[in-house]
Length: 134
Image: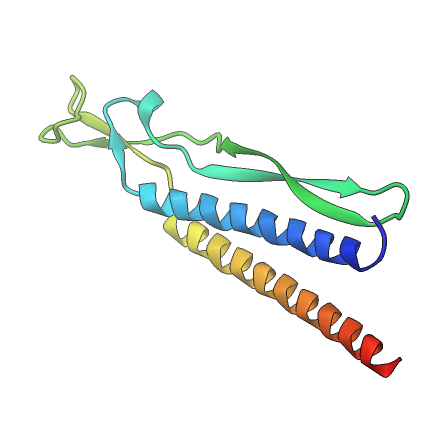
């Protein structure tokens, strides 16, 4: 991993990681407020786990998504005996999704993605300027 291709590869990996982050938050938002008949079946928010990748030869570091896992949070019990999914006690279990937190995740991932796009455009422009000046 060296030269311009490595720069674009690093940016591409970062952009891919941010897309996974945005998709996870979008999935969480889509499932906010969903209910289940028991706690085990309730939706749990998705969280990507990032891992650093270091190229020993070049010393360049990039990121990758190691996995996407369910958050270890408890579903919220709500008493709603009229709900079709209510259990014998009249309870339903709501997905523990904090919509504000998820919107912050979307905004942060979007900003990071945009920063990577701008870094790639700047690098491309610098390479073109270098080629033109020779």
